[in-house]
Image (cartoon, rainbow, N blue to C red; front, side, top):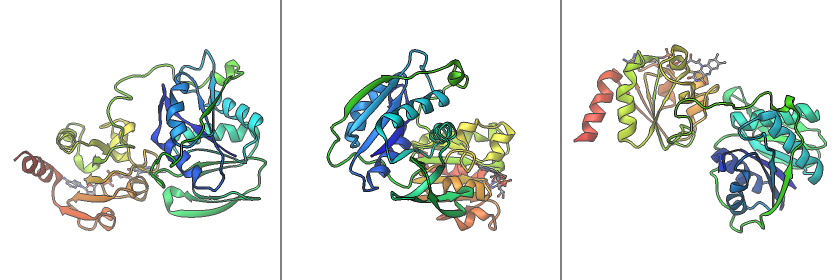
Length: 317
Ligand SMILES: Cc1cc2nc3c(=O)[nH]c(=O)nc-3n(C[C@H](O)[C@H](O)[C@H](O)COP(=O)(O)OP(=O)(O)OC[C@H]3O[C@@H](n4cnc5c(N)ncnc54)[C@H](O)[C@@H]3O)c2cc1C
């Protein structure tokens, strides 16, 4: 049996967790179970049934009202102890990796993050991306229970051809104060509103070449016209021009839009690690030798402060 840790926001399942459960179905084990934790977890059941879950473990606790990684790991460990999976999978997201890292640390088992192949056997054999995808590692997991996370965007989330029986097991986790030391206590700003860059079909992304926070206004307008969202490079978040939620790359979000418009972004390895799964990359850059050119499907050599308003004007007309 494969157990998948499914992350959600008040019952809305993280699409990367749906990728993980889709990936789990491809591994040849005929029984997939899922674990969901905290407030709203029960709302995930219908979708998880569509995704083929045979059994859904719904873990709750009165104090578990928002994301708390150690508490979530405790729930996964309780489900592991009761149900004896061969493999426990999470999404290769910041939260999936964090929860699974706590599971590994508490149970003293090895964890392979960002896997894109997994062969269940003895040992479990995995292939995974390291160094932002620049290094491919083949590894054997010698473990009582193999723990892994699934590299983002290696599969599209797909419901199962036959829904799972979706039986539900409810249980209350045993938690200590220490398990809740790290938890979300407040949300500030418009977190959770609109489309996130991880799910966007169009991303208009800006780099240092944009020049300032104010300089992003035309990019915001273009993104709105194209029905997309704004992204950025780390140079931009380091300058404080855009929030970290917008950052694409190795230490930001890995994205896979249909269109990635890179405006004034040089194309450093760490940035490309986050946008290389885009279907089409268009670069706007004054430098024809910028590294982004070797990754771009189309390039516009020019000043983004002229090119972006020209595209907006063309779309308007
Ligand atoms: C451990 C580690 C992790 C990192 N993680 C990330 C990450 O997740 N994401 C990330 O992005 N980076 C990351 N970085 C940083 C990365 O190495 C680069 O420094 C960063 O991506 C550069 O951002 P940039 O392309 O915006 O800026 P620059 O490299 O300074 O490039 C600016 C580009 O804008 C062009 N330009 C300038 N003016 C204009 C104009 N008017 N019109 C058009 N083009 C113009 C220039 O020709 C240039 O190509 C990481 C680095 C490290 C060491």
